[in-house]
Image 1 (tube, rainbow, N blue to C red):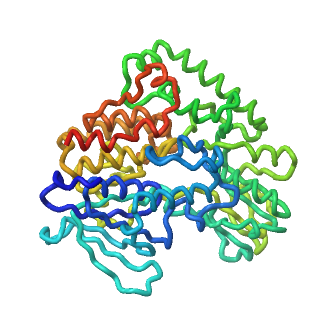
Image 2 (cartoon, rainbow, N blue to C red):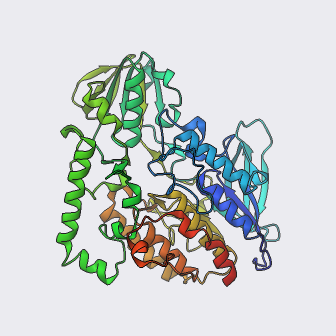
Image 3 (tube, rainbow, N blue to C red):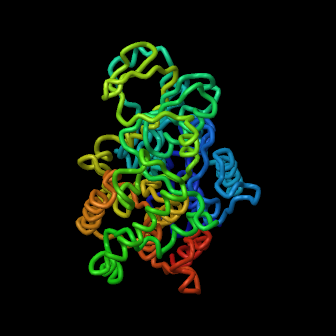
Amino acid sequence: MNDSQHLPQNGNRICNVGAGIAGLVTAKVMQEDGFDVTVFERSGDIGGVWNPTRVYPGLRANNSRQSYAFSDFPYPDTADEFPTAPQIYAYLRAYMQHFNLEPLLHLSSTVTSISRSSNLDKGRFKVVVQPTDETGATETHFFDFVAICNGVHSEPNLPQIVGQSQFAGLRLHSSQFDDPDVVKGKRVIVVGGAKSALDCATTAARHGRSVTLVFRSPHWMFPRYLFGIAADKILISRFSELFIPYYQKSRGEAFLHGPGKFLVRFWWAGLNSMVKKVLKIPPLMVPDHGLPRGFEKGGVGGEFYQELKADHVNTKRGFITSFPAPDRIMLDTGEQIEADVIIFATGWQQGVPFLEEELQNCIQKNGYFHLYRHILPPEEPHLGLIGYQSSIACQLSSEIAAHWLSHCFRGHLALPDVPEMEKPIAKVLGWLADVFPYAKEGYFIGPHLAHYIDELLQDMGLRPTRLGNPLQEFFGPLLPSRYAKVGEERRRLA
């Protein structure tokens, strides 16, 4: 379906940066809206974090396939209930082919700079692109709109440690650990306390000579199943969202987190107890604080605890201070550990370094992402970010955000003026710092999928409730299939 008659008069050329989950769905939505879409992807393949060159052995989705999907393209029945990394990659390729996105893609093309254009006849933005292998000529393109979809997991965070250059073994980020043979017969140290660290330690325990997990503090893991049901089908719902405060509250939520807060405490006490019991989390790996504190660092899966219980993994709480010798590390406790391979599951750096300073200052202020609805810099309504609304179902939050941004680019969204957009941004940043302190940079909505999607739909003049049964709407799992008609609905309103 192509609907170009309502496009803005100043042009319809749009540059998408990135071909992962956010980039593919944004390209699909924009193309259906009649935009002339060009996607630049720095790697030689699609998939983003699910690109086969970036996934560690044993990786699978935190979500079941019903919730980790786009609204109008379900997984095949052959996929696992919690899809593996190869299954997710195959799904994304099938999505690309089904919606004919391949002609839009320019792979192995690194965007080196985006700036405002001085020649508006060519386009509002100047985009400079270089072949990723740096063997070809640099190209300059002009576009009317830009959608940044490089995601919050694009630049590995590798700590700099004293003496690291003399280490004779292998140092790598978890995203580079793509072959279990790397650790076969080796003394392995995994650094980190979140899901990727536990997953890497589990694989290393099954293939390495020895493995030690070094972590500053443990983080909460959730079981994949509760009461025999995929846990996300219970926890991703309007009902479950009520127990973590949102930055703005309904009357019922104001009561629940005010006079009725004993109900919230009861809910989380029960859930904390259940998680520890179901996963059999040993005392050493129980976080210092109970849920929901630390929710933003949580993950899914308990395989690591089984390896720990079987004494296949050693654990050390602390951090690496130096490399005192070519075959060992030193901890802050003074203890030294021999190692052949060190895997840093130490997260990612968030940023958009290819933006020229003027645009950079629109998007990030004082170290925080400064985006209206987690999408739009108030001072530049022709540029948006998709995937910076990190959630417990990122495919769905990215898809609805792409609809919102496309609606905005087409001129059908009644945006507040800049001072009015600044107010909710300030509220969101304050809320994040209080409720999700590990995600205070401003790109996290976490469990508040329904709250966030409702805001976007209301902005577009669409009804937030999607089901005829109020009980199912409120208590049922918030599956992407509810939103399969959003594109048709908003185009009918245009």
